[in-house]
Amino acid sequence: MHTNAVALADVERIDAFARELRKSIVTMLAAAGSGHSAGPLGMADFMAVLYAHVLRHDPRDPNWSDRDLFFLSHGHTAPVLYAALAECGYLPKDELLTLRAFGSRLQGHPERRALPGLESTSGPLGSGLSQAAGYAYALQYLRPDPARRVYVAMGDGELNEGNIWEAAMFASAHSLGNLIGIVDRNRIQIDGDTEDVMPLGDLAEKWRAFGWTALDVDGHDPRALVSAFALARASADRPTVLIAHTVPGKGVSFMESDYRWHGKPPTSTERDTALEEIERTVRR
Image (cartoon, rainbow, N blue to C red; front, side, top):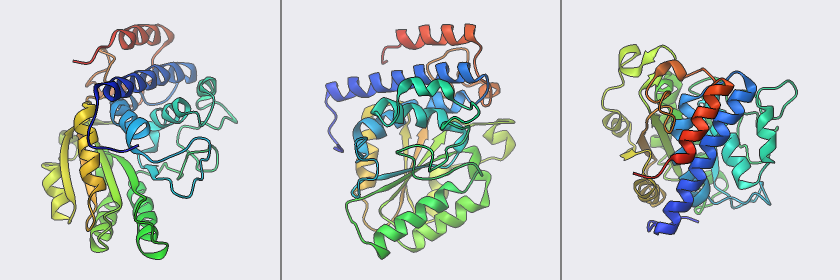
C-alpha cells in the first residue's frame, strides 16, 4: 500500500507498529546483552511507515517478483529491521530473543541468505547505497520494471565514507528515479556528535549538489513521512533522498540523544523501565 493521503486510522496503525518495534528492540537487546540501542529506536517510526504503509511486499511470498526492495546500509541497526520483519510475519517474534546468539539467524549484522525478507548482507559501512544503486540500475535498464522501487537506509555518521558519495554520483549520472535513500539524521556516531567528529553541514544541499532530490522530514511524523515517500516514488528522472531528522533512543527517555547508547544494550532493569515508557507513549 502506498498513498499520499493518510487517514487517522492509518496513523494509529503506523504508531502501533512503531511501538511494537521499540518493544521488540529493547527486549531483544537485553536478551542478547550486546548490540546497538539508540539508532534502532530512533528509526522505528520511519521503518513503521515503510513496512506498514509504503513498501510493496508480501511476507507470504518473500521473493515476490513485483516487490519493492529495502537495503539496510548501516547494518549495526539490524534490530529494527529484524523487528519489522517479525512484525510483518517473516519470522516468529519469539525468534527475536536469539539476537546475536551463536548459530542464530539474527546476527549482529544482517546476512541476506539467513532470513526471508532480507535483500542484502550489510556490515562494512558505506556499502549499502552502492548495492541499492546497482539493483536500481538493473531494474531501470537491464530488466526494466517501472513499478518497483529500491529503498536504502543510511546512518548520518556513515556518510563519512567516500563510497557513499561515489554511489551518489553513479545514481545521479544514470538518472535512477527508482532509488530512494533515507538518511537517519540523528547526529550521533560512536565517538559523539556527528558535527564534532566530521561535520556534515547542510546535508540536503550536499545531496542536491550530487544531483539528487533531497527532502528534509521529521523522522517521527507518519504524515510527513508518507507525504515525502509519495513525492520520492513519483520521481522519474533522478534519485531522491529523505533526510529523516530523528532522536536517537526515541521513546526511552534515559537513552534519548545520548551517544553513549549508540552501541550499548539495556540491562534487564533498564529494559523493564524502557518497556513501561514505551507502553505509555501517546502521539504528541
